[in-house]
Image (cartoon, rainbow, N blue to C red; front, side, top):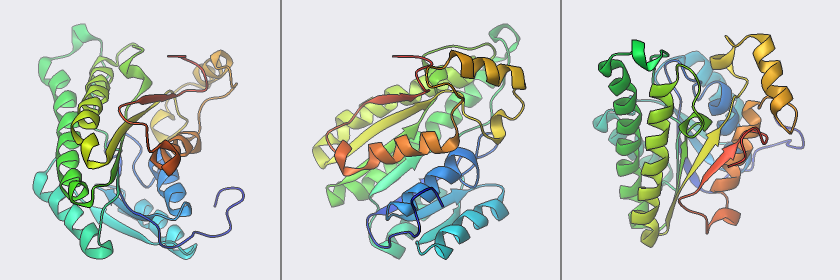
Length: 263
């Protein structure tokens, strides 16, 4: 549990949470794990999707249930329309509606200089990232339009705006995701559906464990708030954007980097 939380409030809105998979943090780890738990602590009924690392995912779901919340573990390839359709149908069958989608799906990437990268390596990241967002958005909004209510949240990256060596494929794909969310916001706003983006900087997770200690210290020294982000820092921003106080925000991209880059 997080400080100040002794139980999870039952009921509330119904949520669906696709997990990160492959090399990025999954819903059972890192940002995904922290967000799943915080949503449940906020009273959400949480469906957590996974492709790999089922045991860790089951641990997250069990933790939520043991604390008095409702959670459902699911397995789907979020690039596959049939998988996603079944996932959404399962949530609606279980809880009657779908209020929120957190698009936290991440795909494998080629970390190379542009000169050393093939077009297929570059295109794979773009295609996987955007296909997952497209398929998930279509499926979720089909339900949300009927409800006249929905909250869509896309997890991007600071690399979408601030380049770093060997990250051209990842940064370009996340930049496309940010712009896609704006189009979603414009198209679905009349149905009471908002679409926003969280753009984290460097976050201390399993996916960044390869970073040298010296690099983490350097980033912390360059960050006004004085430390590298923890998963909970990003999760809190996600929950904030999904709450009722942000109901008139749509099409915005919120950087979560401790002031490292002030956009």
